[in-house]
Length: 194
Image 1 (cartoon, rainbow, N blue to C red):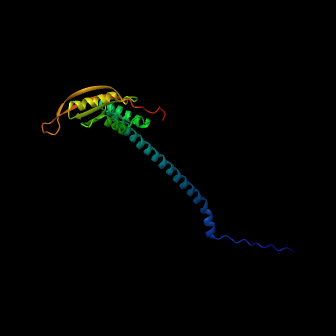
Image 2 (cartoon, one colour; image 1 turned 120 degrees about the horizontal axis):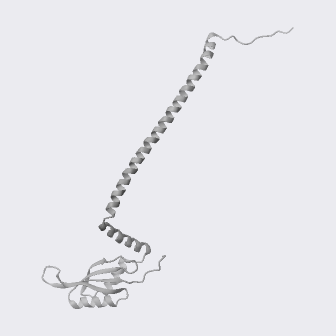
Image 3 (cartoon, rainbow, N blue to C red; image 1 turned 90 degrees about the vertical axis):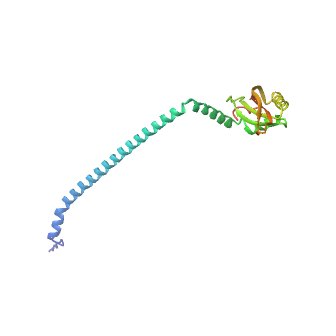
């Protein structure tokens, strides 16, 4: 004879109630989860749209500023300054022109009774720039000696006198001779590519 035992417990009312509500609770939870995911996706899309519109407005603002600056740059006085700046940048990058070397070479050409009053770049030729000198001397002979030294120098050629005259330098009535001249700086430059 076999005896069978049923060890299962009978479910009480609370367990039946929980089992009955588990499926609707799961369905509602899934709906809420889908709604939260859709809301998050919509918020992200909206945020991306706002960012894109802000980026477009910033880009438009930058373009208008760029157009305004381009108009300013295209003015003739700025174009001249840009050409001179590009020339100086080319000289710096190619290491073909040293202002200190130029000043040293000019100072060697000055006789004791003269002084260099001004030095400027008159043209922007890359190979042989034109340099303008303003020189003051105690007498005409010292200025003439400077001009002879300048013409005889291997570093300069095509000397042109722009102006010459007498100037009262310290208000005491003592006149000094002043001359402004230009010359092409023809110093040896390193080969291109250095």
